[in-house]
Amino acid sequence: MAQYKIAVVVGSLRKDSFNKKLALALAKLAPSDFLFEQVRIDDLPLYNQDDDGHPAEQVKRLKSHILESQGLLFVTPEYNRSMPGVLKNAIDHASRPYGQSAWAGKPAGVIGISVGAIGTALAQQHLRNVLAYLDVPVLGQPEAFVQAKEGVFNADGSAGDGIKKFLQGWMDAYVAFVKKPR
Ligand code: FNR
Image 1 (cartoon, helix red, strand yellow):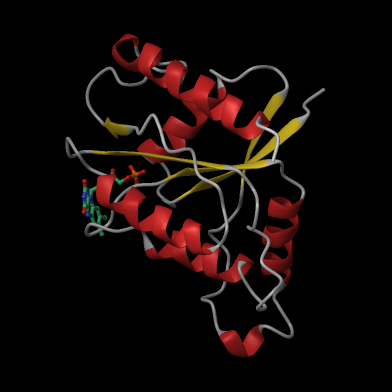
Image 2 (image 1 turned 60 degrees about the vertical axis):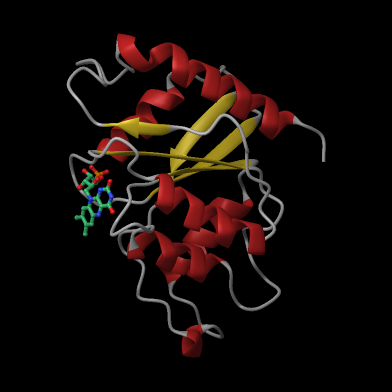
């Protein structure tokens, strides 16, 4: 029985997204008391403050998913040296109405994969800024900037040999961070 439900927010809507694959590969490295579930963000309307008083069903669903979780995992690509708009849109939705943010206090991990060697570093840094404002404690170390290259994932979706040990270390630190009493 999972004691820690983790809401996974993937910053790419692409069918064959490397980041979605990374999220799934990471989940395989977690202990059995952790359950990772991807948050749906592809059907959210564009955030409009006029709708704060009557949020769409998809927005209510998003906020419930986050509120029911014990932790967050953001797995995001970098778009033009920042986070993708779809991710920021989801963050903005669940942060409102003012004073009713779903994010506050949920421990989070931030990680990403891109085709560039240091890709996602700037996206992650921008995301960390936003999460700091939203009162989300984020795992500081280790950082993880994964490069999408041959062999990074095995055919069964698990992490490839070249990166498995590193990702296991990251997951162990993340699990300890989520479990840390606050
Ligand atoms: C990119 N890509 C990219 N990569 C990077 O390392 N830094 C960047 O700033 C950008 N910028 C960027 C903008 C836009 C609009 C696109 C579509 C792509 C390339 C990106 O790493 C690559 O498309 C990944 O495959 C995206 O992640 P997913 O969709 O595979 O998870």
